[in-house]
Length: 442
Image 1 (cartoon, rainbow, N blue to C red):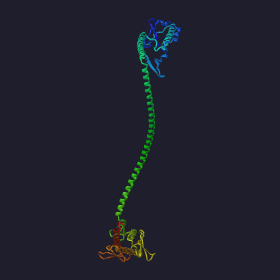
Image 2 (image 1 turned 180 degrees about the horizontal axis):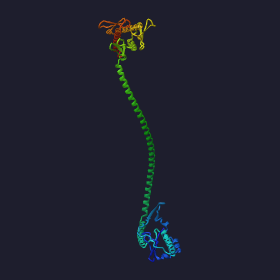
Image 3 (image 1 turned 120 degrees about the vertical axis):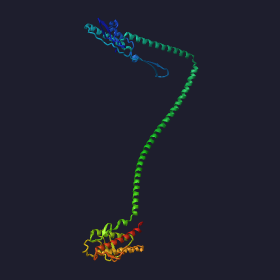
Image 4 (image 1 turned 45 degrees about the vertical axis):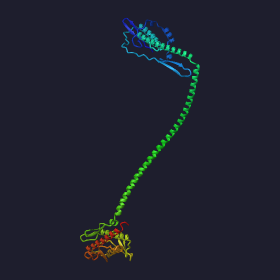
């Protein structure tokens, strides 16, 4: 919608109602605008100067049909850019009020004039009203565009005349031959195009096949890496297990080597001495007035002694005559082979001076008899073997001074009984050493 203004002088006052749509300067309308009425406005409205629907919203489109090209069109577009409003230092100014009659007349006149400018603006690409200077500038621009358009029309007319003259001079036969040549070339090109399209279809099929193969290969590759990872994990687990087994085997071999170098009898039965006492596995065998050894320790020592002689005899495959050793811890005893019901205990529980049970003495004498049988059995295979202390009828002889010491408690002193037991353990130690040397690798 166009917006304009009017400048009237009433005395020394100026009422501004319309401004230029380009430079925004206040306008002083010509006096002819005062003669406008509704009939004139109706005539302007019914006679369109330039329909906006024809110019396509300020865009002129010229379409030229081309022969033999169907619906294809060439478009020439001419865009008319909107004008930019320039800022102006002048604004609307109202000075005092008019009388009511003049104000109503002016309002009606402004409404009619504004409607006229709206009609002009709707029927052209230019917003109205315009001042004289802007109108002159716009006319100059339109004249310039008109001269350009006339020059273009002149050039087009000359080209058209030239083409018309050339067509009359062209040999129609040459054109027909050229047309045939072009048709033949078109046919060949169409055949080549068909071949290319067929080849393209084959390539598309091959591409599709290759893509399927690629997808299958990718699936196989993914499955391969999954299986590889699983097998790799199992292999690492097996390697860890193998290393663990190797370490265990090395440890077992080292322990085996130690065991091979270890004498079982020496490790199991440690015979030594503690002062006047002979000891086996740290159990003292004997009693002294100044050192009253407990009978539980003596019984335990006798149990270890019986077990040692029984093991040595078994190692040399010796079967004792007259007696059978029965290792039974601190309650070990000997069995008489002549009288099966007779047991000779190698353990005591009473005092020393008032111990009148002779079975304990008989058991110790029987044990010395078994030790003597072991000596004789070893001498059958090794003439060089001998015991450091001679055994004879329940007594042990010291070769250094020829004194003999009884193994019995009755009618014997504690010192002599303890010494006899010490010599007996020494003989057992020698027998133990001989068996260990003979059966180390067996």
